[in-house]
Image (cartoon, rainbow, N blue to C red; front, side):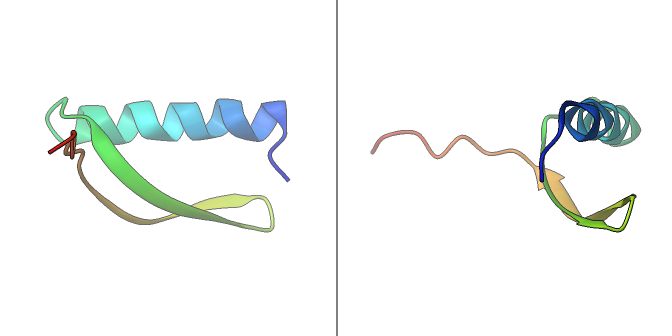
Length: 51
């Protein structure tokens, strides 16, 4: 369940990941196992846009 506390933790993980990867916006896949956030993968965000 996405609680306010978990959302706040995910925001911190997202910010730290972006900073660690050169400040580039990231598309992050994650899971929660128990109380731990597990990052499955991260790649630069690409805007698909309308074609």
